[in-house]
Length: 540
Ligand code: AMP
Image (cartoon, rainbow, N blue to C red):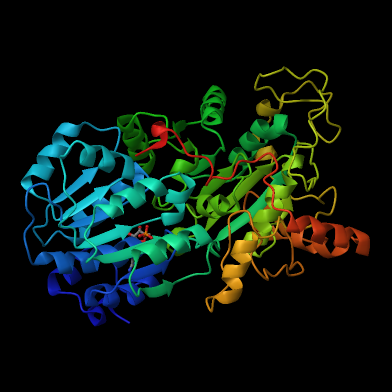
């Protein structure tokens, strides 16, 4: 199918062609005709699928006729983060270059003055994060009663960030008669409930199995002691041909700590997280996108939707607690058909989180080892508690970013050479036999409500946060992977997660116990995102 078959005007087609696109992506192919018809759309699509153009192109067509009144936008796009909002506004500029549509971007962290002046002139397209929009509504600066098209983008991310009550409030200010386009990478029951409330007879579109990583991303997990992670990361960066990489941490404070450590060791790095001032975030992202700096240490704020051309690597300094975040993080690389490589540094006690990632993506992730760093095995603990702390090791400089030298497998052990002094070329990252076979255990089962919804629905099985995707296949392993600086190559001496699943024999009693356990819904030590209502700091 061509863009010309989708019902778009010559001006929009010209803008698309100027952008260098020749064929529509599947989401564009499916969504554009329905949006042009005025239908509501429920799209299950990840970023990187071309979804932004999927809604912006037909919106430009629809909005081409008509004029906006002061402070009364004609369309509203809600985005969970400022970066995504800014990216959508760039898309409007690119695709709307032959139209005279007024657009305003309302994001937190920037002055109100400019934003209000734009609103006063009348905007056709308003792109906003929920917090800032509510502020302006509360101050009487904006009226949503003229909004004809509403887009809710990255709805599951809104849920994670605690924005759903804000979104519900915003939607209550909109006219009932409108067109709504609702996009989410995953469709847990809470999101489905929202979609049912906001959409009328929507056309449902799903372009990829929810949360499946692109095939163009080669993945590996390296299990090391937490204290060895920084050194392992440095060695990985040195031995991989890293053109540019995002390094994800679970916590904002770790982003800063890791950044300092990398800079101290001579790496070219900057940081991005939600506590930074918006101007700094924008500047940092721009520098990284322009290849002025090679490494971006980030929290999950950077994981969703941020489009960086040709990112060669993603490193997860921590295993994400929510399996979906893994998919979003590694999805920053391997975009637009290019190859990408993603390494995850796991601590032994991260077994449970690794298992839920494996269960989510339905695919094994090869284990590997970094040469010179003691290779560990993943541990599983159904209670979700971090079971084991790394034993204190002699000679370890507490809190400092010094390599530990007490491991027998480390080449420099006993030689007096520090790990970071080792010639990187002589330190390829290589695969080794994993110390212990590991199995992809099923995380806790879905809630009874989720199960009930599934059984009464004719829709394909939906996945719930922290829950096991229904009938996710744990296929026996194919050939495992060997990591070398030249690329991850097939090898026979790496144990792969899913392979081990079949090998660890379990008694009937154990299986019964596990089944019993799955009926109990508990959160262990982890507060689920939907209970955690962030304070205003996290708002856009
Ligand atoms: P998105 O999922 O909207 O974030 O888009 C991901 C990337 O795909 C962006 O860099 C877009 O510029 C690009 N893109 C969108 N549509 C197309 C298309 N039809 N052909 C090629 N690239 C596209």
